[in-house]
View 1: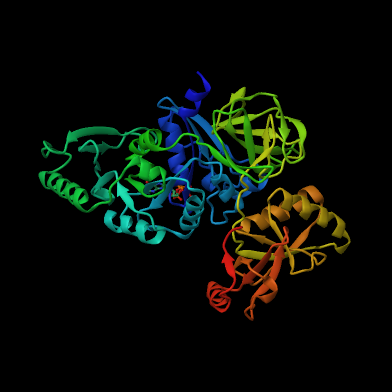
View 2 (view 1 turned 45 degrees about the horizontal axis):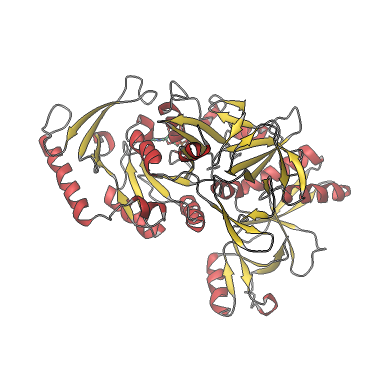
Length: 527
Ligand code: G4P
């Protein structure tokens, strides 16, 4: 198969959701439908079940949650699917945002009872910022939740994007019988497989126009489906693939991941509608903005580093997304930042429950290599050099702390550890404004980042630490003369590790107040 065919059949995406909406369940169903696993029940590591494929760090195993942003690859209906696992626990971290930058599209999972929740909102914002198109899946229709119209309105009002239903639920809760496919004007009635969600359900298809009641659906229910579809035709948002690709509309699908209802139409839409790898923005060394097309020579960038995935060999894996050309095992490339040749050896691809070595990779694919070359997050590699892929933005930290060594004699070790771990992107370091000699403090978007930091300081740098949380809950970068900024009473002016002025607030109201009080400055949520 040639390069262009390989590009066209690639779909690289991430699933975003608030914890418990059903991301893990849906991932598992993708593996079931692609034939990667024969029965569902392998992926999740919840509540001490079998270990999940992403259980690499010991802490991850202790807590039974997914910390690493891992990638899995498999075939589905002639497409090569790369699914990027975004850490979705309550303690989500900057890795979640970074992973999104490696995705060409996103599936947003919403729990029908809870609607659009905080984490979903934040992650959707990051997608909007990067221009990543979003497919919406309203999950758990087998339980009682908000009505489909209310949910669509919530997506529109909370996220500010028009929603267009491509299918429509027939009943809900115990009476959730199936879906009406709007494009085909077809009713799909589901019957649970004997093994429940472990296998595909049986589907009966009926034409909406000619459907008649039977033992599975009554004439009244069919009449109500017709009414709903007519209403949608008249009052619903228009859907075009182009509008979806330009983030002007999100197509909405309903279903129940646990029983596999509505899962296949969603995956088929991913294949039919979601984009394959497109040109990626970059800056040439002279500052000119360019785009690197996927069919150009090989290039890739690092979106994540993961240390100590294998405790037996203190390794650090760099995850690169291939943006153009063909990667071949053991190839040597130019590391743009250091201008040194590096060998991209021992790549790994993760398939369901095992890691395999990869011979070649194409645009959209993720390669994990043992990082002996000192690759850092955001670094670009290629054959010719001369450009850098656009840097990933930093998102507003919301948690702040000081980390103090329990043994004060360990200052040197902790300094070294903090410098290394912040370079890897585990945590952001901040300093008193105009005083980089001050003892740094730490900032994160999720609490887990602190725990990972303490764990790694103990494990790798032999420093036991105490964490003192600071009373700030949000922050912003300041655009304008920081020395003239009127700092509210409980806020703090600081600078990040790139010397950019920032302000930390004890609550969002204070942030609003500061914004009003400083009309000549801009407050940025990402930089
Ligand atoms: P997450 O990765 O987004 O955090 O969600 P996950 O898939 O772990 O699902 C969270 C809970 O919601 C799980 O229940 C899961 O079984 C349930 N769930 C997922 N999809 C559906 C669905 O379509 N309908 C219903 N009714 N429930 C669903 P749990 O009790 O926390 O875990 P478990 O004991 O079932 O594993």
